[in-house]
Figure 1 (tube, one colour):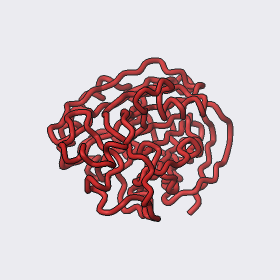
Figure 2 (cartoon, one colour):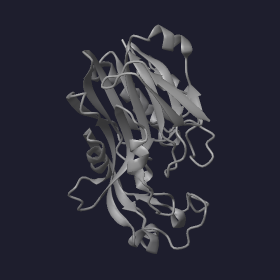
Figure 3 (tube, one colour):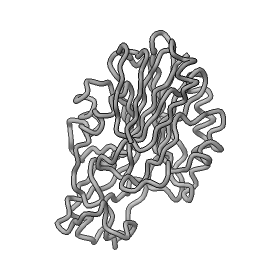
Figure 4 (cartoon, helix red, strand yellow):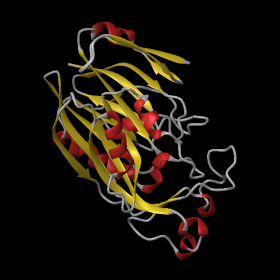
Length: 310
């Protein structure tokens, strides 16, 4: 399916029409007509899975991010290898695009090397077995001795997992902050949200990026914290994007006062049946168009929305 997204006016570009490969498209024509003269901002979200598939095979994440052609890109599971002075994948993507970047480490662990027995599947099944894992997370508490005795773990590359917000240089970042959330007992990552304040053609907005835990790990508590803190730590007109590890109706329940900018299945990328990656909006922000992009290497498909500001 091909999505035709028409931008009538952009923060740094004039009229254009982009043809995007997509699996789902939400194009509210009433909004498109009503906001034809509004400022349009494009936002994309992508959980990168540390730039590899479930066998440790790398993919071209720089091309995948560039193909999103967005003014602001929110990334989850960006990887920085231990000792990497260049700043890891988020910094590399920002340099590649010429974008500004704000990043935050949310976990430490190990990323497996490419496995010699890899087959056509994205990951070995059953994927949750320690012997088949692609990422080992141990930043909050160490993994047990059984896991650490695995050759797979011992040969894996140590490093850190981050969330990041990349911003086009024509949108100067006026301020940024990290909202640390409560560490859940069943979670191995330290959840947080990045909030950046930007001016979009003289309109002040905030854009947040987040990677939430799973419902079974107690994410309801983090959602409540996040909703409460964003009341005062983000501007009235705001966007929140991220892998929220929850379906749309659940996210709407947890994030009252926010609306979904697009609907489309984003996970798992090879045969998506659920949307757990979301772009939420509030205030004088309205959806114009949205798309779920094709599989690009991660277990999540990237999503993108065109938003009218004001």
